Length: 119
Image 1 (cartoon, helix red, strand yellow):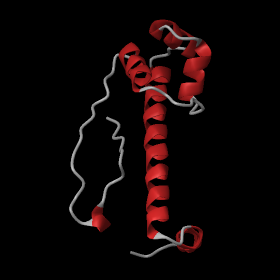
Image 2 (cartoon, rainbow, N blue to C red; image 1 turned 90 degrees about the vertical axis):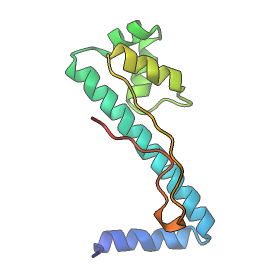
Image 3 (cartoon, one colour; image 1 turned 45 degrees about the horizontal axis):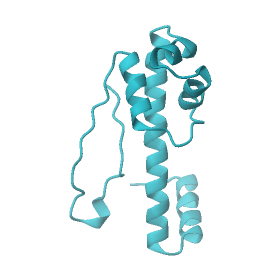
Image 4 (cartoon, rainbow, N blue to C red; image 1 turned 180 degrees about the vertical axis):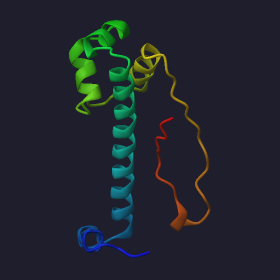
């Protein structure tokens, strides 16, 4: 597989920034979690917009202030609870499917700790 100059430079920067393999792995786990969470919020917001439902109406349906929904869907929420995300999904008439699987035995083939696959 051929790396672009940008991806090679990024890999070099990561290697310099995280000298220990454990530090780099921890960083990669955090990035994977952030990306997956962002993908989930984007998918929910696209469904909301496609349903022509305002953020204020969504907030009313789940019983929270409009600012809570705005922060959540804009990715600015902190300590978002799974029950809030489930309430949003329910109000949008969708469900979030989750499954838990063991990591592969080989370290090199580990999966991100969380992954979002939008239908």
